[in-house]
Image 1: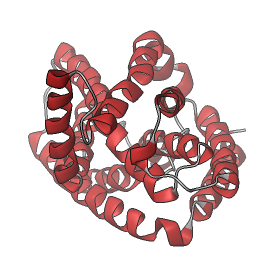
Image 2: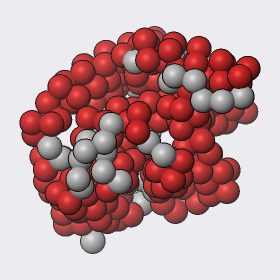
Image 3: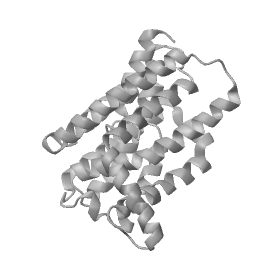
Image 4: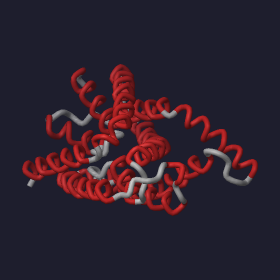
Length: 265
């Protein structure tokens, strides 16, 4: 990989992992559209490590409190403090984990098509616009119910389709259930932690099986750049979300999807 490829792909991953525009789609499309050689599994794992580090550092206080209260809930056999949110994140991850086990071969082959990405980008973008426009936006993430967890968790499983956007589809479901934009985003970001761990772990196991040479400099640069960009993205996205809403991201998705259809049909 050239230095330019490393910088572009790491920045793209860092910016798109938490915006509702699909990081997986962009990591597939950038090499295709630029006619670069595929960046390989090792680099994909590295940039996911970077974005995971960013979200865990950003929410470090909440994560520590959730973990402590989760342990207390196990001891006391009842919900304690932030343990409800911790359990919500854990149970909300189950559907995507099961879907990944069942459909990973399909996702890694057939669904990586630019046309699949194009239609998913447009379709789920329109769904995001509908949820943002019609959602009541009255609840925060601490009011989440087990029914909400099931619905958002099942929605997250759809993000295995490239172009859907994990953050986009979980925010869509949360908005439809009446959460505020900020609450929907915060819960989506917390929910990303085990999801990224699962995806990164799966790719890491595949990488070990391949036994290919590793460009450690490229991986370290990828981790650092994607992590920095992801942290900046989370900070400003949460800061500006209530003011700008989801419409700019919906428009971006529609334009990107139309562009892809024009090229690949």
